Amino acid sequence: MAELSDKAVKYYTLDEIKKHNHAKSTWLILHHKVYDLTKFLDEHPGGEEVFREQAGSDATENFEDVGHSTDAREMSKAYIIGELHPDDRSKLAKPSETLITTIDFNSSWWTNWVMPAISALIVALMYHLYTVED
Image 1 (spheres, rainbow, N blue to C red):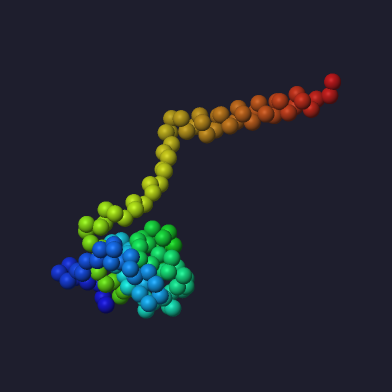
Image 2 (cartoon, rainbow, N blue to C red):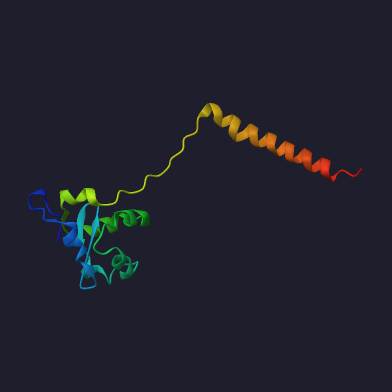
């Protein structure tokens, strides 16, 4: 079935989706869309185990982590059967936030170059003092 238009969207609850977690009926959620991948189990290049682990739940994060091609994303549209009910969307686990550090350009030069250079100089001097014979 091709991607559903907004007028004909069928909504499924999390409870309904969770029931489809076996080989005879394998559903999963990607970006709030519900996919019936039962017929695709044998064709998936990564094997059916990938789907079986995620069946009946949200697989968005794992899908994105793998880095699927544009062709794979287009192909997946054929398996959309509906969307996660809006009331259940807040129940999905939020992806963990990635810690992004920024570098303050004023301190960057000092902390990234001068401090390590001074530390290396001190270590070299200590090494020299301990290895010098009396």
